Image (cartoon, rainbow, N blue to C red; front, side, top):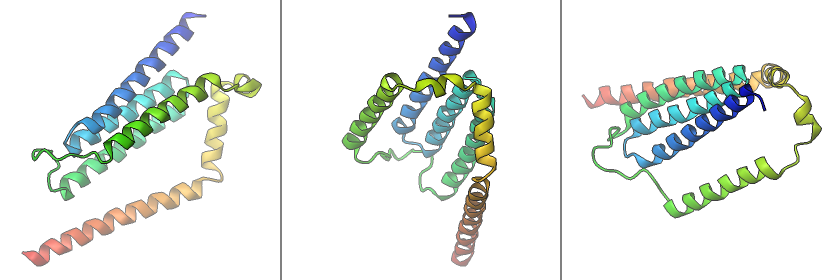
Length: 173
């Protein structure tokens, strides 16, 4: 194994552990804003994993999308939550035991798939650059209309929710 492969494995592992740690922090804090920031860091670490795996397009896309999404989410939480800072000690977790069991089972299932599935010659034959190119063609070809429609729908819903909230406040004053 060459030095590049060892460094690549190290950074994939380091970013993976960071993603898991920040994902745990999301549920350990009582502040919605801190949860949004921890989720941003977790998703950015996944973007770092993509970059370490030489999937530059996916890595940059992941980081850009999550930064925008989490910023918008934090703004809306501050606007609409009764206690976005978590000062009243609210508990943001529901069905704790079930979610813990589901998380552990999901982790073991993912590890089993990663280590025990025979990925075959197709996974070894495709270079990372070719995989990213084919994914880009898939996303920008037949799936583009779906993504654009979903984006416009979400933007319309955000604008409508803000307009309704502002209009309701003006009537109260």
